[in-house]
Amino acid sequence: MARMPSAERRRQLTEAAIRAMTRDGVAQTTTRSIAAEAGVSLSVFHYCFDSKEALLESVITTITGHYVTIVKEAIRPRTTLRETVRAGFRAYWDHVAAHPGEHLLTYELTQYALRRPGLEHLARRQYELYTATYAQLIEQLRDSVEFELSVPVQVLARYLAAMTDGLTLNLLVLGDDAAAAAVLDMIDDHVAGLVVDGAHSPAAVS
Amino acid sequence: MARMPSAERRRQLTEAAIRAMTRDGVAQTTTRSIAAEAGVSLSVFHYCFDSKEALLESVITTITGHYVTIVKEAIRPRTTLRETVRAGFRAYWDHVAAHPGEHLLTYELTQYALRRPGLEHLARRQYELYTATYAQLIEQLRDSVEFELSVPVQVLARYLAAMTDGLTLNLLVLGDDAAAAAVLDMIDDHVAGLVVDGAHSPAAVS
DNA sequence: AAGAGTCCGGGACAACCGACCTGATGCACC
DNA sequence: GGTGCATCAGGTCGGTTGTCCCGGACTCTT
Image 1 (cartoon, rainbow over the protein chains, first blue to last red):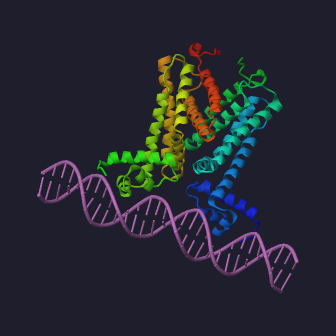
Image 2: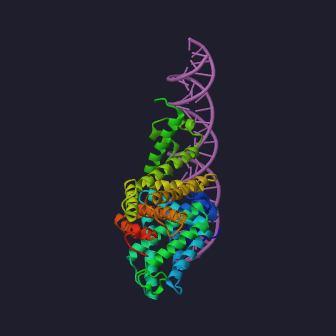
Image 3: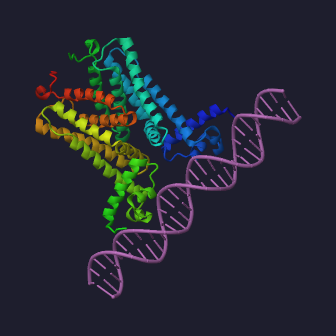
């Protein structure tokens, strides 16, 4: 067993926990299975983390960071706003289809946090970060393209976060990418229709 | 302990399990806590159900039935389509705000089913029922009011199911009913805008 | 009233879990 | 080349969980 500073060991254990939980689910993941996944003995676990709960805290913040990165990288300015929105959704969607277990894990972790007294703030922070990420993306997009919205940024951001969340869970449960794609097309139209400045919006709704 | 036929005992245990799980979460609910909640001895539990998994199956189908009933009762035809949609959402929303634990439970149960090999079909059935319920509501509404949609009923139904699901989870985590109401207003407009026949839609979008 | 079928109670068991403890081992520094 | 500290290994402990067993009690039929 190679020796390494505890900070790095913590990272290693966190990543191992994410792998184990992605594979087996939060409920069936034990401190032993995490230690085994990381290839270290059980005592190393408790040397690096005060408790299982402390590790879960680390897992939640880490995986929320993953999620935010994915969403931020999905959105890249294109020629028209509508295409930007569409391509962004598509990129995010491909990630969900490719890594369903990891996304399912985010829901499990949210509920773990909600049910554990004193950890509710982690769930809240997770969802606030989702909304904040979308708000930031909208602002950033508005800087590069220049447009006006018929609803406040905060409202649209929260809608996008919630709707994405719901549609993701829906896809994870039902599969059927084709049907989900049809729904997504409808949402594309809807979001594009929220742009007041008609310059980049194909449907000229006054 | 009053004697009763096992069918009724099963119902009683199922309802007790829902209460216990709503209060404590699925993970912390044990066969013992369920038996205690129902006021019966532990052996009665295993007399009525082959295993804990069998009970969970009963819980899932029961609570999904509850959910469908709630949604169906929320929608009642009003003077205009837009008002019907708005009032329907509002009624559903009030229920979520009044019974958050029960709604949170539905998410926990979905994930329980998804993670338990051989029980995935329960999660799928749950979400198919959600979509089917919305589709049925749309058809029923179309019979009484007469209108055309710019998207297929199936697509709209799945969108409504997914979006409601996401917004519900969002509200359960973040609270803040006011912000959620603003999002809902936006969705009202969106859904009302999907109606092609402008006769009952206040916003005259051609 | 007798017996079969149904329901209930207490107790026990094996498995598993998180947490902890005691030594041993490598590493850097004096 | 010790010395102190960070890191690791194996074993153990108390507690909990799902499941099962067996004896007794109730109820309905005949």
